[in-house]
Image (tube, rainbow, N blue to C red):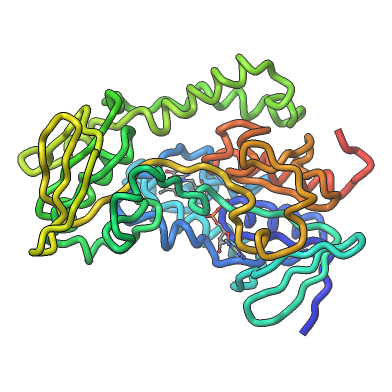
Length: 386
Ligand SMILES: Cc1cc2nc3c(=O)[nH]c(=O)nc-3n(C[C@H](O)[C@H](O)[C@H](O)COP(=O)(O)OP(=O)(O)OC[C@H]3O[C@@H](n4cnc5c(N)ncnc54)[C@H](O)[C@@H]3O)c2cc1C
């Protein structure tokens, strides 16, 4: 079956849903393809605390912000609910229903360009022809695994934390978490809460500050960006680096005291300069690890909390299609203009792949309304390109 749609949105997470709502509101014919809130259902485990505040909503056209959602609920406990990933899923479902966004729960296998259009092949064989395609995939698509370290382990003995949502297989296991930032400690708490026997942490930096994140300073910047979306893009490299660093610090460089308290200290061992040098498998199946400080550990499984690194060429439907040679990519990120458009006319990228051009705001849900407005307004009136 072949389908034609003027606008194809690939991704049904916050960024795809936000743009779908904008398109519905303005009567723009479109298709949203992807699994509804896939990362939040499958890659972000229950118990991982949500970084964000109630004004990080998905609504660029009004009426369905998180405040609107909360106003229809009993007030007791709303603050606690606002800080969980389950809360975000509940809000997303309400938003999706209220905005009547039609989501086609399929996977794009290949994206080709033919003349002035794009052809997206879905896993059920459907081909969608669109003049405009917006790719809305998050950081979960780009887990970073340090090559030097993964070479030391067999493939079934490690995983990136962004790929684990079911922790049942780690029950009773001795785990080693590699990383330096907040997620290392959050995962340590999660592993214990899910029955891990012991947790070791290998770090090569000083680790996160124990402090509540403060996002309040960002509100002005996000609102400021509204009339001038390319503001971040036009800042000096120093200003950009300062903003990106501050966002990074609040999101990954800090850990709330409440999360710290969840760590089971008598079964957690932190190796502050514990660079992994060697690993070998003992006949009993356990892994023996030699650290550069000379200490040896016995573990069963390794978790890499080593962050994310955009690699546009690794997106399967791009790797399998015919656009890669023509698509301009810088340090793994697609090069975008002020409307999120790549050098291939009609092809846009938002969410984390837009962070190089538009800042670390795009590592979180906070930039969903801005993204929807900028891309949506341009699609409504292409001659207004900035
Ligand atoms: C472990 C982890 C924790 C996080 N915690 C927070 C947090 O606390 N606060 C916060 O604001 N952000 C957090 N984030 C970032 C979060 O990913 C973004 O805020 C948000 O989900 C990005 O939305 P999205 O729409 O880009 O992507 P997602 O919500 O991930 O949606 C991606 C969509 O793309 C679809 N897709 C992928 N491949 C294809 C394909 N081939 N064909 C069709 N569809 C496809 C998926 O099915 C899905 O619908 C976290 C990310 C991770 C990985």
